[in-house]
Image (cartoon, rainbow, N blue to C red; front, top):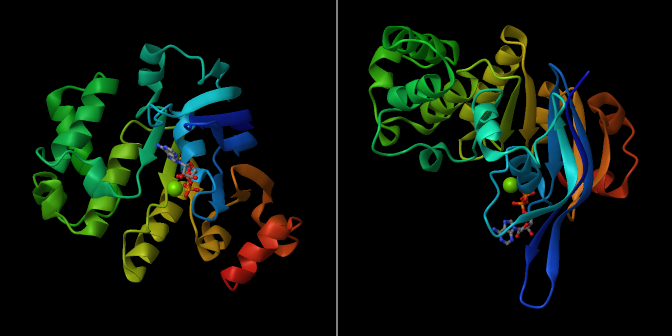
Length: 259
Ligand SMILES: Nc1ncnc2c1ncn2[C@@H]1O[C@H](COP(=O)(O)OP(=O)(O)O)[C@@H](O)[C@H]1O
Ligand SMILES: [Mg+2]
């Protein structure tokens, strides 16, 4: 079953003399309880596509055309107050750089609790309990102590775990993770990928994973979509696409990454 169906998504940005198309008639389906990888070179439109789902685009960018179906709603046209109920609740976002995504002046525990305060009826004691449970679930060492820490006091890997804890706090249907390991060293990257693998089994959630790493795609993803120059050129199950890539760009990408 499809959880999200993106149809003909086109995103543009005005330039001095013309309109630049950043995402060009993209069609992408994210299936329930499956991991969909979105791959492609830098500047191919992956982040813009992902941010469009929650309408978190830079104000200069415009969704010119297209429909994003989620539960009979079109997220492109949903009123802002309705979308706010979905952002962070039904759909959690894990950003590339958790140091910038967290607010520096509040502890990470407080910021995870804030999401619960906004989206659930849990009381304060229940929320505090849930924060510790979430931090434990994502493999944060000493959850009690680390919940009190400010973002800059945590290591990169711990911050990324805290961000994932925040993204899954309200039992989302979908986690969007935009290159969640690219700010981490190789060992930590592997640990975070293990964490996603575990979450995929433990909590029933779909994951849209943006990544450069075809090794990660082969390991973690069920489906894969390939973008280049704002267009989605190939999509399908990971085994089909990686074993029998159809589009020249996919073949190039596999060669470039020595896959
Ligand atoms: N705020 C913006 N203003 C102008 N151009 C932008 C903006 N954000 C992204 N772009 C352009 O959109 C294209 C796609 O970017 P992006 O979605 O970030 O690609 P990716 O995530 O695949 O690296 C790039 O050419 C980028 O320069
Ligand atoms: Mg990007």
